[in-house]
Length: 565
Image 1 (cartoon, one colour):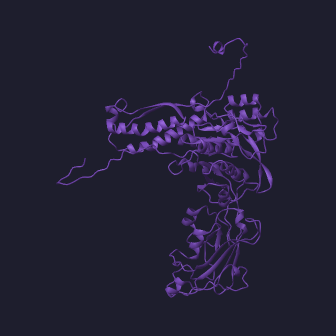
Image 2 (cartoon, helix red, strand yellow):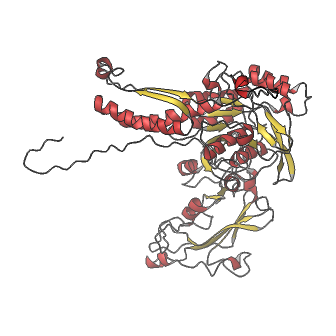
Image 3 (cartoon, rainbow, N blue to C red):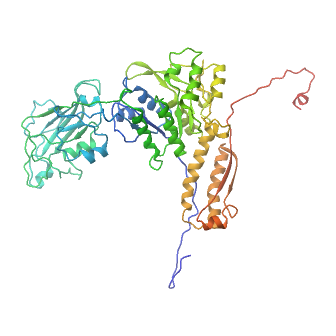
C-alpha cells in the first residue's frame, strides 16, 4: 500500500477483473485493381453496395478484383481493401484541358501536395485516378451569373448572394452554387444526371454556416464530395480564398462550366505490375494498424504475388492467405490435364510450405449483373468467405469445409470438378478440392493448409485456432508488462488465461489444456533478467476427414453382444 505522511483515510481499488479479450478472426484483406477510389489507402468495406460506392463497378479490366471483393462480402461483412494502380500511368481528370493530368492518390496526397493550389491544372480535379473522371462536369454560378436560363436553376431555392457570415463582417458577393454532373452517363447510365450539388457556399476562406461549420467552397468540396478536389480559383476569382472582412468578392463574368479531361485508370493487367500489387499487399505488414485474419489473392496468381502474400502472413503470424491455381490450369483445359496442371502449380510454381496458406482447386463461372455477362472467377475469395461465415455461425476452430459449412455461392459451373481419383491426387499434394454435387451444390471438400510437414497445423481449423489463442492471450499478456514478477502476478496471469481456455474447450476448440506460470519456469535467473515466462499447452480438436462405416450382416440366432465384443 502507499505510504501516508500524516493521519488520514486512504481508499484504494484493486482491479482483478482482467480477462482475455475477444479478437477479430473474420476480417478480410485484399489489394485490387478498381475503376475508382483512393490509391494506397486502406478502406474498410462491409457490403457490395459500399464496394461500388467507394471503388466503382466492374469492367473488363477490373472485374476479377471487383468480384473477388464482392464474393468475399457475400459471406462476411468486413473487408479491408486497397486500390493499386501503375502510378506512372494512372491520372486524375482535371479541368484544364491544356495541362497535363496528374495523379492525386488520396486525401493525404492532396493535403500534402495539392491543397495550396496554383498548379495550373484548372479549378477542379477528379477525386481519384481513372477514366471515370472524364465523365465529370462541374457547373458554377454566383449572384452575377445566376439566372433562370442556367441549366441547373431549378436545383436551388434562390440566388447565391452575400452570405450571412460575410455580411456580418462587412463582406459581400461571396455566394456560390456548384453542381457536379455525370456528363456522359458513365456513372449512372444516364448522361446529364446530377451527382452532387453544393448550394450557398462561399468564396471566403473563413466563411462559416450558421451552425459553425466551414462554408468555404473548397473546404466543403474537399470534405464532402465523392467526385472532386478543388484546386485553383477561376481566373475571375482574383480575391477568392481570402477572408471576408471588408471584402467585396469579384464576380464570374459568365456561368462556369468545365468537363474534366485526361483521366487514366491503368487498372488493367497490361499496366499494373507485380510490383504495384505487392506494394499494395505490403501495407498489411503493419499488424498494429490493420487487424486482419483472412487475406485473399483473388486473380493475382503470379508466383511473386502469391509468395509475397504468404510471406506477409508468415511475418504477422495471425493471417491465413487463400490462393487458387492459375486460370490456364483449369479453364479450357482437358479433364485429364487439369489435375496435372493444378498439382504442378502447387508444387513447382507456388512451391509453398506454410500453415498460413490454403489452396483450392480452381475457378468458377458466375454472372456479372453489372455488365450482363458471365465471368471466370477464382475460388479463393469464396473460401476465405466460408471461414468468415464459419466464425459467425460457429468458431474459427471449426473446419470451413464439408456439406454443413462448405457451401459456395454464385456458381454457374466449375471450370474443374475433380473426380474421386482426382481428389485423392489433389489432397495428397495439399490442394483442397471444390466439387459440384448434383442436388447439393458446390462444396469445399478439404481443409488442408500448405504445410508439407505432417502436423496438426496442416489443417486450417487448427491453424486458425492457434491464431485466435495467440492473438487473444497475447493482448492480455501485454498488461503484465512492468508488473512485479512474483507469485501474485503469476497467479493472476493463470487466473486470466485458464477461464478463457476453459471456454474454448467448452466450445469444442480444444480437448484439454494446461497453463504453467510459477516458480518452475520463472526461475530466479528469469526474474533477474526482467523476463516473464508462461507455458500454455493445448490439445487441439481435429476435424473428421475420413469416415469408415462397417455394416455386418448377422444370422438370426446370433447375439449382437457377441458380435460387438
